[in-house]
Image (tube, rainbow, N blue to C red; front, side, top):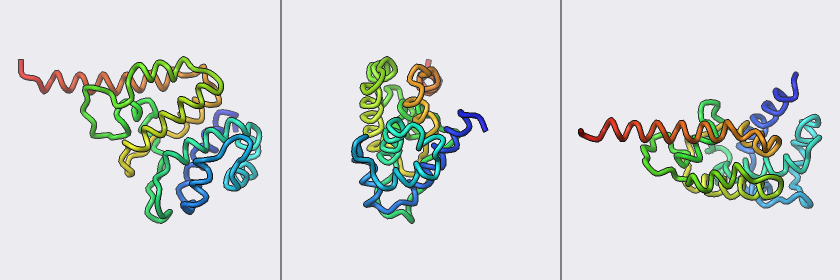
Length: 183
């Protein structure tokens, strides 16, 4: 298995594990910092030693973001967070709502540009903030591609997918508005 496949597998599996967590451990993951990783983090690090266990600081950020995006409440009622067909960039544009028609993106282009330009800890802070905003607007039944979040943290120079999918979603909404506008 390639490193990319291992990261993708770990991100998807982690999202599935978080879906099944009780509210308390999930809240611990939302609040955790690098110095105070939650027990649920250590369990995932032990299960995925070549990915989560090997780059703990980065995965603490990834898992905190996934926990923020995982709906609150009882585990048995939660729907899956991961959806291969909903890129993170598109979800930022439409606030996680597949029925969004625009024309203004929920996450502004200015904020997207700041997020994409940031590196290191600043990138992680902006990703966390974007995820908090997305968590408040995203319908609980709408998932997103959690692999994009993992790669945004692990390979911060590789932001093209986030930008491309954000603007593709924005362009589709603008084109649909033009078609609906009488000439």
